[in-house]
Length: 330
Image (tube, rainbow, N blue to C red):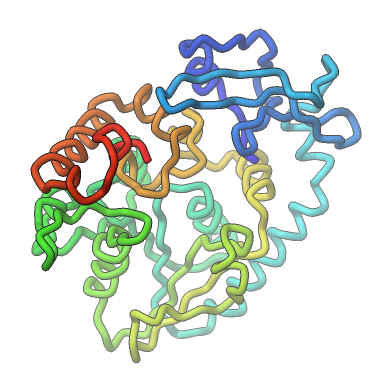
């Protein structure tokens, strides 16, 4: 569940949705449902936002919406959760100090400009750690992310020149003559443009601690993570990962950000739930595509043209039993 900002409301309005209900610093978005808290903490669903195959946006009144009018502001919700937020902060700072301060290791803070990364950076500063913050230039991040990283003075890790950036890399072909287009079953972007460049950037014989904004709630795979982790791709390098907010919920993160005044990536204001790897991620949905079409029309059209050319030039129409529109949108 994330806050709804005026920029997203403007997007809804421009797509024909009625937005007279909007009050600043009050509403939340949860899986395409507009929600709010009534006095005392009861959360109610107000509107459901849908996107069809033609990327038409509609918003309908939710069955839980009984024309409520008096809702908690974000500030009031924060105060209601004050004790929990304080305990989460205390636990994370203590964990950072106990694992990092006397470790004798160089501390590397990874920051994608996403909300979780920014909270970890904030907590590491509060914990009094001496650390360096690095941003992976994936060549897929939008301008807002790159400018935010530069504005905050993050050091940059560039992709390996042999990959040449994402849009150059996908012009290659695999052993079967297929163009290197990422899919949910064949995804290489994170490995080639984040993990491998990071491994190659640092010396093998350094003793490192990496700070990651990974949370257990994010996925089934991440639900089993403990405070300390090790990436199997690191091999026998003496590197460890520390996860200071792994037990935080997404809602905890947002309340903490709003309370502490932590800078956020503008993409969140636009309605995105994630800010990394814009436009081409195979895990994005129609809901994300309609945001892309509105906020980043050039990037949106460029990627769709790449997919259409791949479908035609590489004979996908012969082997996939679908139309060009189905290939682009499914």
